[in-house]
Length: 270
Ligand SMILES: Nc1ncnc2c1ncn2[C@@H]1O[C@H](COP(=O)(O)OP(=O)(O)OP(=O)(O)O)[C@@H](O)[C@H]1O
Image (cartoon, rainbow, N blue to C red; front, side):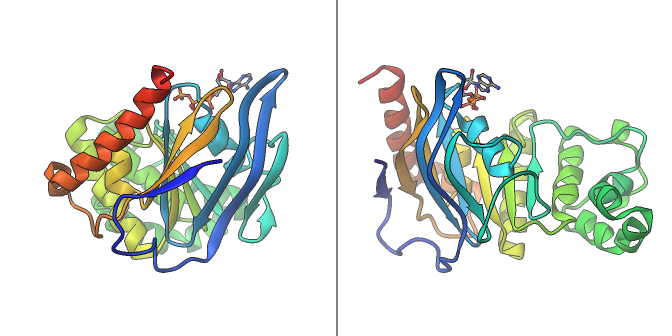
């Protein structure tokens, strides 16, 4: 049973509490190996969740199951009232690598999900929306550029647009900025926050970085291994919009320290 810890009592979680994702008693085994056991998780509309835990505790497996890329062995995974039985239009995903197609321009890459789903005509009709998204993330001028000419940060911005173009209900993010240098990563995290706030997006992030989880998330799920489970839920009640200066505040340091202690206890079996 996981425990919910509030790092501040000023408010009772996010203002809107319509559940988008509901995961109940979910377990996953690979043969005799139990990767996840008894995972319960609710993600509300507009909420930013983050999962953190040691390597191999099941974070990516959890995300793949949430994305419908892998079935659970048991339990329920429900998104917007319907069980997740496979990949869906209302799920947007972003990975560590931008995975843009090198022979398509930035704009064409952003339109790719629409082209695959509804054909070239629909993609042409959505070009205006794609341009608006490129403007939103600050790379409007790069629409005709090929991925080989984009910096790592620009490529990840393009992949944010590609994720947003189909207006998914939920954004699943598997360490999206971990391949970027630290400055770009900090900046991209703030951009991600801005986009999520503007669109009232619901997001779920897998990360190895405690400060990244704390600066972005409303709620952090601390996972432990053998078998993978949510050991503790920490509500992060820092005000929004968050900014990078908050990282140097005592409050932020206190939260990071708390989570580090929890993860350390697991690593050293205490
Ligand atoms: N397809 C698979 N077949 C067998 N075992 C698997 C499979 N996928 C994952 N596992 C195992 O399940 C466990 C959880 O893996 P997972 O990749 O979800 O962990 P993680 O927390 O994301 O790790 P990392 O932080 O290193 O990315 C690991 O022990 C892994 O070896």
